[in-house]
Length: 226
Length: 341
Image (cartoon, rainbow over all chains, first blue to last red; front, side, top):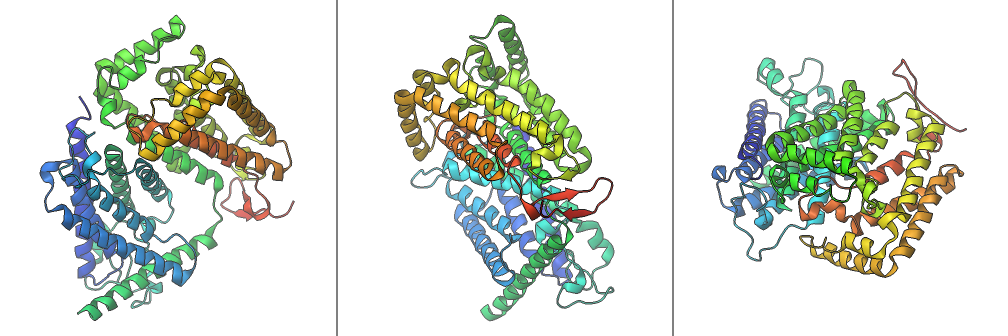
């Protein structure tokens, strides 16, 4: 007996819910011409789908190399975002950094799946040619970072901001000014969409919650892998 | 095409970066960091980590290779009534592994998230004290105290007890973080008293029972290298060899360090700082070289052991000077920087 299969299915469903929410926000942001936070939505969509496939192998699809490439690109994108942010505005912890860490974690999980045999539903990906394992120390560090991010995201008074780093008053954004300016799904400038839909879907605490769920799911998978 | 994409990408990167800076600026002008809450959130992170560890396949497994087997293994050597309570608990877990483990994990998730939400922080910390005490008894066999296997090198007097101590010294309260965060909750005198008791106990446990036995200390580490990454297995072999050759001397030295750290909180802040750094370095080394990160890297661990919690406790006693300290005025949201004095 091991972890009940139902738990893996539960995590997989949660991951798909995160992915689905990311896709909805992405569609809304495209419709509203509001690019801010779009990268996080894309990232969550891919991560959610990929993680669901890790928890339930029957739901996995696509070659490993494709997923590695996707998450490597996302990681580089978020690292570039972080570096630029620090260059422009001095030393601080950019919100993109945790997304870069998550991208890095995903790459590692695809690169070193060989150790993922401790779960009752083992991962579907084939091992690396060398049979190498993810280093336990690195895994532990990433688990602490991910779970710490989950806790500090929940505790943040700026709901949604720690997720996208973009929930700011419209007037500070370029391309929009004044109290009547349209607002995009992530608080950025937007046009055309009824505010009702956005208000109902792009809820800051819900965005935080998806980040928390993703962090916990990823940390759990790392524990299973290491 | 590439140019168009780059332009879009630049715009988005720039906007996100601007957003970061705006938020950072807003936070910096809003209020200084509440150190007590920050430390509580770190404690919540460890609780969340424990909760996720509780979901490992091993925890749901029945028999000698599972969680109930581990609990059962704590009983031998204990006085009859202690052993009976441990086997009774192990028996319940054996018969209902999924139900009991689901309950255990849920309680730990509840504590972690409860600490985060301000309205439930006190309830969650209260629950954490009760839960930590129960786990100390039933899950750690009272830390091995009754069988003389409670050396701090192995996590004695029980890593989970530090969760309870941290819940007390980080209990939400108004007031100043000076001279150290732990004093804000229970007052300077009581906080220093708790510190002395904790470190005094650690010093005693270094010297009693198996704590000063080279063979027993070596056995703590020997065999732990199975399933560990190569670099940690190498450290294990070195530390096992060192403990076998100089175990008694190391125990006496560490006991002396604990006594020094215990009295350190009564010394001038600069000297306190030195003793705290010493405590952090020593327990970080123990956490890696002896406790092996609680055995997490080899699988089957229930918690990260005492290392990170002792370090977190030390941080709660870190002397704060001048503008580092925050004064929270009861009954108001006004926060003032305490300067001078």
